[in-house]
Image (tube, rainbow, N blue to C red; front, side):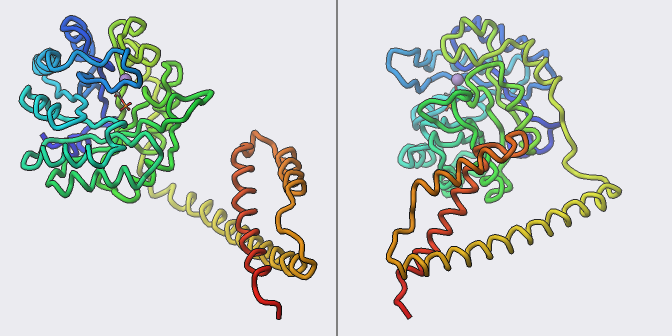
Length: 357
Ligand code: PEP
Ligand code: MN
């Protein structure tokens, strides 16, 4: 099977579903039988070896679970995928007949581990799905793809599962959408799957994140599904039943990726207006930087520091208070002010440290 081709040829989104962990043969048989009734499900997932944060958590049933998943997949004519974290896992999974391997976020982060797995698979062309690394580092994610490509493995797919943070009020792993978008830009031939289960960590947010992925033109979704989610041995709070998966899928709005000729002109008009506003925005920024340099000249002449914390705090708080958060988020306003301020400091610094004329 060529996974990239299968994803490209299939109706969107390419849907991968199954439990966080393979627990018992009965659990797998039950969930796979239910998932097979859902025409939209195209591949089954199940964790056999679970990389858990604490050693007292359930760490997977191990290789005994491989035939349970592989046989269930064969019975319903669905390919299966498992996570592998080292060459031994990869070897056992291949021997058991697993169709697609996936690399977890805690493995992608480690180039030595990726290299070992890539070397051990050289000569096969097993499809591999690579989750993003736990930290938001696009280069590290791309590097993992390159290690597999260099080993001759070309059937590669990306899975966006979000990025670790110490604590976040909403997400288990923050999405940082610009990183999968960056990967799509730099490696456009790699299909992109979103894993809303690990991004959200909670089932009530799955729909919102899945919809966002669809609106960003992702190719597929990987969602954790369990016959009795609350009793799952791992990641209970984020798993859903096969019925809830159907509801979630039915509620997704799938938008066209191509526009009709008649819509092109309309869109071009709006784009042209935006472009002309961007021109103005940049003209204003240039004028602002010129004024920053004037400030620098003044500060140099009077020998005073660039940064006045109180002054800057006042500018930020007044601006935040003046912008309607329904129109522009406070985070956006704050980030925008920060980048403008940094560039302004750079200009002042340049002037102040130049030789007096
Ligand atoms: C998983 O898919 O169950 C898993 C462990 O994911 P991640 O590597 O994204 O943490
Ligand atoms: Mn999980």
